[in-house]
Length: 621
Ligand SMILES: *[C@@H]1O[C@H](CO)[C@@H](O)[C@H](O)[C@H]1NC(C)=O
Ligand SMILES: *[C@@H]1O[C@H](CO)[C@@H](O)[C@H](O)[C@H]1NC(C)=O
Ligand SMILES: *[C@@H]1O[C@H](CO)[C@@H](O)[C@H](O)[C@H]1NC(C)=O
Ligand SMILES: *[C@@H]1O[C@H](CO)[C@@H](O)[C@H](O)[C@H]1NC(C)=O
Ligand SMILES: *[C@@H]1O[C@H](CO)[C@@H](O)[C@H](O)[C@H]1NC(C)=O
Ligand SMILES: *[C@@H]1O[C@H](CO)[C@@H](O)[C@H](O)[C@H]1NC(C)=O
Image (cartoon, rainbow, N blue to C red):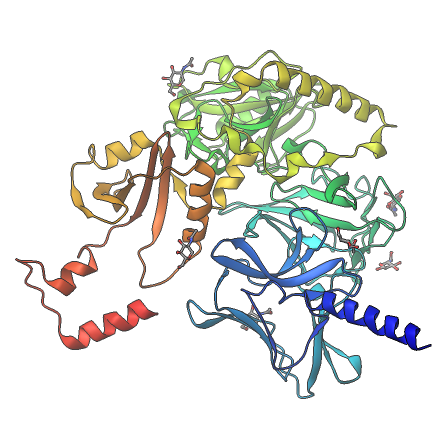
């Protein structure tokens, strides 16, 4: 007896030794700090962990993640736009149920769950489902993380009319796509460009019956069940390829705008895709911005419509603009034909049963018309007021052809639009110096995961796709070297996350007139004055002895980009071109602060003690 109870005691103490490496719940008044790795909450079965997740060495985000997936896949985060400093910041549960995240660096509340209950909160805990809850007396839930999803929906978590998923990148920064109920109560995917918003799933060109959806069911809701089946009130439904119990799953709106269902391989800790809204990424419209066209090379890449050029050659997802402005005069424009190309919506009164010439005339007479799609056979004519969501697919499946209106003066070689690989002729991209540094960054999350294509093999379309993929891989392997010059669409998206514009070295040489106006010498390099094309004055800092790699530099930029403070100079862009590492920031007229403080020579401005005190206070902040 004695021995048994002793071993029992030993067992429980071993168990408790393990619990020291994490908490089961958070009681009112206590807090989680960033520095201590043991300051995390575990779900009872250990699947999920909640705590301050380091997105970079110096910044953390309060998040929930899968404990055992490699790379700790985050499923929810509280403050992705305002990460806290990794030292001294903490999350506290107050007796009234409010959770407050304070940044040590700024000394302010970065996030709160907005609960202020009259009844006392008992505890905050992480449930086995991955839901973080704040419980009051009698176990009533005062707040739950499931009510405010970020980019992921977990089994058992429902999406309702007031909720939405927003795509996020690896640093958890929100992107351009969202998943929510639309005004007809249909669960849909939306893309957002600066001034445009568009729906791209379910296929907007289909009518409601073909979509197999039920509109206007006001009991809006949808959830993934534990077996891997999703069903929503509008009959939106899909099933995981590995349907069945006992598998950890997540439904994530990825940064590329594709909605994917993943299953965790518990041994390897890796994720497999078991369903996705778009097996062909180019069909996620809007990847290439306005007037851009997504093509397979066979990696999805962006090109401009003929007669157009990239708005920002360093970020092709920003779209394209006309090389010269277009006149309304019918004599001064012409049409360029783009076979197998389609653009999304923005139709100016579509017509049926008209001839190609008639359709051309309609677009010619309408100054707002920028081109039209014509479907031979049926005679469908779609004059367009904007070119958005362009895609060229050799196997588009019908005879739709796009005609783009351009000024007569612009010469267009037919080869300027590459036919989509691999079925079209070979496309060898123009590798200019401006784009050759992006190639190795393509390997972002999605490409690493193994795609599970079990579910679709029955359909003929899928067979075609398989051929496409195999051929694609084959060509990619064979022509790997040429393809390095292509800008994959995904890279463009990676760039948006930086909040920065990427400049080429030549652009900065021009802006600074070959680095003539030296403003001063900082610790890390010389600062020059420059004027950008858009007439903005900037300070251009050439970083000396930066022997770090591209990736580290990008990473650091990301951190800098997310620190906004009125006392700090804003960084607008950067250049990472070959050996050059340059920061482009706001130009401050009065120069560096030290000149003011230490009154170097001829300066007339002398600061009062009061001003100096204010400055000191500002710096401290
Ligand atoms: C996570 O992994 C650890 C060690 O690899 C294992 O002991 C634990 O059971 C796993 N937890 C879950 C929930 O799978
Ligand atoms: C993080 O902060 C520490 C202390 O302020 C600093 O020494 C270090 O260089 C920072 N690291 C990065 C990557 O910014
Ligand atoms: C809390 O309330 C503030 C102000 O109303 C709001 O900006 C913030 O988004 C809310 N936070 C949450 C988690 O709902
Ligand atoms: C609901 O969806 C299923 C599967 O997609 C489909 O078979 C069924 O016809 C749909 N129901 C309606 C009313 O559209
Ligand atoms: C509306 O959705 C609910 C599920 O959320 C479902 O039970 C109900 O049958 C739907 N109503 C109609 C009219 O289809
Ligand atoms: C590649 O592009 C540059 C600048 O856009 C141009 O000058 C050059 O002629 C192009 N090369 C080819 C082979 O098209």
